[in-house]
Amino acid sequence: MFVQVARLGPAYWDWVHRPSSQRTFRMFRYDFFEFFAATSWWAIPVVWLPIIAFLMWRATGTAALSQASIIVWFMGGFLLWTFLEYMLHRFLFHILFSQSHFFITFHFLLHGQHHKFPLDKGRLVFPPVAGFMMASPFYLLFRSLLSAPTADTLMAGALLGYVSYDLIHYYLHHGKPTLAYFQDLKDYHRRHHYKEPDLGYGISSKLWDYPFGTLLGSNGTKQ
Image (cartoon, rainbow, N blue to C red; front, side, top):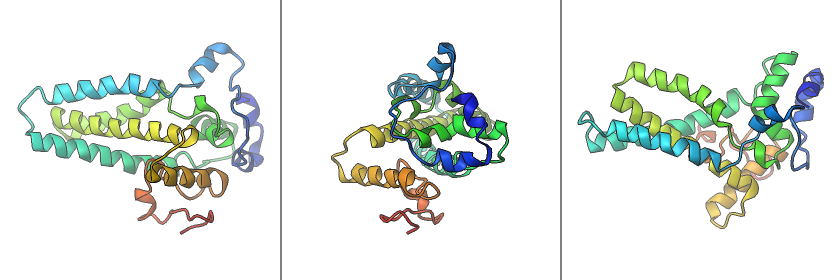
């Protein structure tokens, strides 16, 4: 499918936003590549929580930051992630830069596969290798602007926000929420997939859909 998708050309955008009921699909011909193309949900906390713990251990190992500062920077990082979640989802995952083979393939690998096959459990969470590649520039930016303990704390908060997002995203697709908050989010995200993919970009919360005017109503239109 990886090769075939690029040949769709102008038909790709409509095709990828018509969800399939298939519960899985094969991306690559070779097993080696297919192995790295699918990720189990539990890999996210297994990989990222130790990194978060290490960053916090290193940040709190000096007297450079007060306890209050640590809390503020950590929560700031968590809030920063919610903003990045929205911006990446809207302006990277839902943009097709051109109808060339390269950009169609890029979009399908990055996010299109999830919209085409929303029931595939292996295509929901972000592969850790790709996650490292996306997270590293942000960490380098933080280190260039802030002290090492501050950058570590901010990054730890942002990474915890990311882990929360990925697990919530998986839960919304394959869990059976009992809390009203998650029931509402599940219905909200379902509308994003099946009614209007150009609205409702918030996944772990609707926070940034409000100020940016992309709140998705119950009837599948802009609220």
